[in-house]
Length: 172
Length: 118
Image (cartoon, rainbow over all chains, first blue to last red; front, side, top):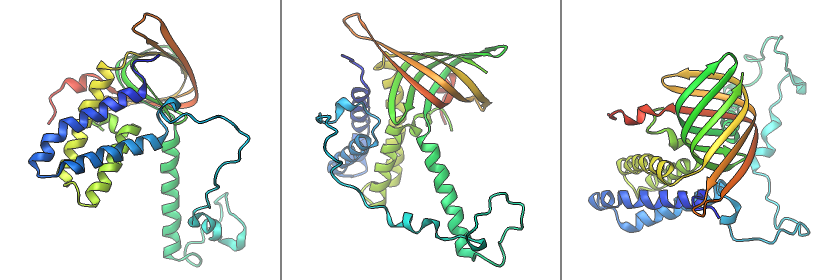
């Protein structure tokens, strides 16, 4: 029994925000239906994000006998992804040779590569485990660090955990 | 990043921003009203963590790197164990332990919140 489970806290936050902006919506002449739509959209996205504890979703019998109900087809852009090889198909990874910028690979292709790189790194960033918090005190003695934190959100393996206060010890 | 917008990077903040984005694009919500909703979220999530959450957490791990800039600590830790303890009204304590191979800590100075904004 956890009175302050993540889903309860998040539900309260959603309720709170919707209540706080209600008068602003009225003032701007935006229909209340739109505000409801915003709430539903927010809640749906949060459910789908998987940060909430499993108890929130309707209980499913945990039988691994059944195969997954459906296998999603690969997005079409994935199948065309590794198609732009330079250097006659030999991947060049040491970078010691001249980059084949001028003769091979037109402008459009270069742009493609750049956008691939940036979206990849964004994804990496997102699946990292993260703690967001405020610090009260961070101190260090030799290689031992101590922190006092408050009001934090921990995201580990896609799940959220909340804390009011936290203290930590780390070795550098 | 200021303290006020710190929690926008959380998943719940991210979901709200996405929802607002969609509805602003569809011209159902004017942009400045969207900004207002985000600002109210900043206040609401802070209040919830301060008032509704009772969990205390202890963590231990290895500090790989650290940076302090503009009153923000960013630390990367590895092999970190988090022990979370929530006291229930009955007096018993519920504990959970979670491990992370690698985790990034982003902490803003709490005193920033008390400073007048804008």
